[in-house]
Image (tube, rainbow, N blue to C red; front, side):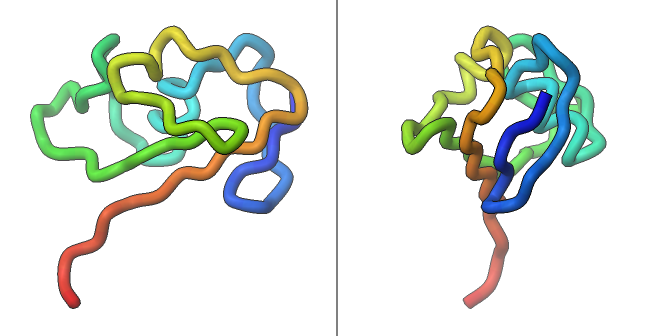
Length: 78
């Protein structure tokens, strides 16, 4: 299925969740609570269709055809 990720068309498997997408993009395994399985900070926030998805809901938030997803990562420095 196709979604829009940070303004660009992106294909994901049918039934993919926000957690699945974040895991694919970061290369990190996530637990059901959205935390990285390796214990390191993830530094990622996600909005789906202009609404922030709390990390605790990533696992249960299914993506749908045409969803508009914004994924931002925190960077250190100034």
